[in-house]
Image (tube, rainbow, N blue to C red):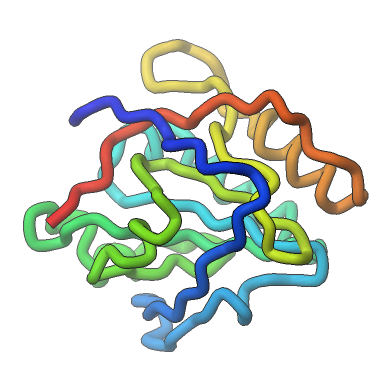
Length: 180
């Protein structure tokens, strides 16, 4: 496991389009299908990363809390499933996230987003312009801080209320994406 920070893309960049399979349903899901009136949160996660596992319950709660709000949520795994079989689509399908969890086998979507780690978060407004890229909160495995969603939730609430997202944003850190 190599500790890797987010690349922190420039705010205002447009969300790269995608259509990816959802291993749980067998259906293809596009960015246009998951976005809602106010925008969309695109997360890069995986099954095995201890940084993702550490916040998994909070990710579930975040998905439930926002399921009826005007902000879409989608998770994507871009890890090399041959080298990391725990991240294979059939293992992804076992997760019961309250949002689509899609598989980026070619890793082209992760590259288009300049995703670097799991977890990595990208929040886009109604015009699909990036307004937040960074950490979930400051909880990390071993630091005894609870997962509160504070940083990400603050940005999501700003988008929902039409307020500007704070310019001061901290990069996420986690396992590097497992490139082929």
